[in-house]
Image 1: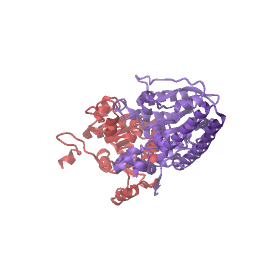
Image 2 (image 1 turned 135 degrees about the vertical axis):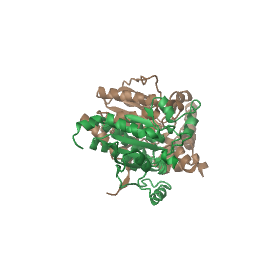
Image 3 (image 1 turned 90 degrees about the vertical axis):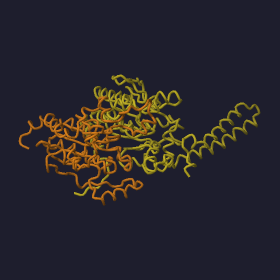
Amino acid sequence: MEFEQNLRVCQHCQHHHRLTAQIRIDWTFDENSFVEHDTGLSSVDPLSFPDYGKKLEQMQAKGETHDSVLSGTATIEGLRVSTAVCDFAFIGGSMGSVAGEKITRALERGIDLRCPVVIFCASGGARMQEGLLSLMQMAKTTGAVERCRAEGIPYIAVFTDPTMAGVLASYASVADVIIAEPKALVGFAGLRVSKQAGVGKVPDDFQTAEYVLKHGMIDRIVSRKELRATLAGLVRTLGGHLLHSEAGA
Amino acid sequence: MAKDIAKTHKEWEKPLLELEDTIAKLREAARREADPVKQANYIEKAETYQEQCNRYVKLMYSNLGDWEKVLVARAEKRPYTLDYIQSIFNGFIELQGDRNGFNDNAIVGGPAEFNGRPVIVLGHQKGRNIQDRQMRNFGMAKPEGYRKAIRLFEMAERFRMPVISFVDTPAADPGVESESRGISEAIAAAMLKMFQLTVPTVSVIIGEGGSGGAIGIAVSNRVLMLEHAVYSVIPPEGCAAILWRAPERAPEAAEALQITAKSALSLGIIDEIVSEPEGAAHRDPAGASDLIKEAVVRHLNELLKLSPAELHADRHAKFRKLGKFAELL
């Protein structure tokens, strides 16, 4: 109970445990403000990849119907946002066609509704079971970020544990503002590959939120307790021009 | 069973290489032979072997399996970006550096003339001998490579030059240095920049289209792929390691991943397969260059009919529709 009250952060070591997408939404946005969109999307097995179809069936049988991303709209301290939240529990949060489509639609919804976009990343990378189609989601989502930029729609990314590979090397890294949770794993290549190919020895804090902050790749590390207020502040300031330009809403 | 499968192109082509070696020896013997009867005999033998060799080449390359395509795409003798730049473009001037402290030799590029028109050409570059390979980091680009590419894209936009990119990389560099300088951000930023362009862009996958390292410079209006090139979200070895904890099962993984040009075309990811000469590009680099040039000219001419705004919108629309899923409304 105490652990839950502390937002699943260990009171002794401050370790931020992983959250499901639904809990993340509950703890981030105003109560009952989240409206899920894109609910009809589901993964297919376009390459008839070994065991993939079976895996998808298993996940769906467990009631895991939203694939590795939940997308929709919500409010945070009364301010409207479009959002997408990765779910690491669904095949490692991997980005296949459905995840790519939901991230893209979340960004586009920001443009349509003239509101900021907040995306929570938690993914091992592209979903290899969908082959090249997954690789193309990197381009597709990045294209949507470019359209947000052109339209003056602020986009804030939160790197949670882990934010890796094809997700880090696409929409995640080109957000206007990047926040990470403490100690989140953030990196391009799996640690084993890096070590194997590495020129020198791997630093102790290699591929952590602290490491990428030190190297200038993210803006801030924010503890879970302060995340909501930080996000609301960014939405309010970066999205301020949207509120003023639009009457009503 | 895996033992019988070749691991390198050289190994796979061994019977051919031996035959070619024999032919070369016979021709040399013929050249040195003073006795015209013996000489004619050598030449006849050489020709018989040559015919046999030609039949082998045709047979071996006419129906390549997925793993064999991987081997051919990685072949040491396969033409690389600079080979095509030299054969297809005029007056190439290489530009270097990311203006941020580093230069990458795994991505090369600069202005050149293509079919009588100024363009920006760039691509991954692999090395052919040991020193070269190290200097080019095996074609694995670091952040500075993608940042150099961004510089070139921006220049193309300023001076209204079409962009032609050649893709040939096993992957982006996964080392500590690259990680510390933000390889992920560099790749994402390069894709974002390509989406912003309002000039025509054409990419050609000429060898290995290795995952994020490849797409970083391949977000173009038209994406072409050589017949024996491969394009993949993960190297087959890596996929086999994850799936079965057995990198040696890479040939199976190659099939599962559907990495051939034919698959990429049927998934709608590339626009055209550019045929290679018989026996693949490395047996006839000039022929391969001609085929690439013809295809790029054709696509570029179509794109040049579009306005800057249309080119921008066309590229966004092209990638926006990629993906396969079910949707219940």
